Image (tube, rainbow, N blue to C red; front, top):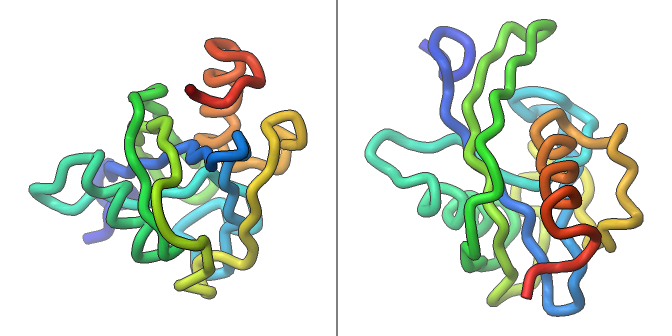
Length: 147
């Protein structure tokens, strides 16, 4: 049985800001679980018995080689992808980069990475949860990075 297809999956993600106030984006690769080719505030699935906050920290280390600190919960996204027959529930966090250099550790899942200012992001280029995260963040904080 597959998460998100045979039963509702739980994923988690984060808008991760660096010391310059830029946010981390990753482009979903050809072996991504869904929304291939879209830019994303990264994340991944939550394992049984794992807290969402632990899962996002683990995923960022595994996939991008750096560490983060969770600052707060941003929102919970209902990620329903009818065309792909998937349903996910995803808590999304605001986080800051704390240690390490970002690099692509799983090239089949991610084709590009970058740090950008919020004002440089085209919402139409984002995955559905990331588009929701961007709107929620801007509605709440404007274009200001977290303090």
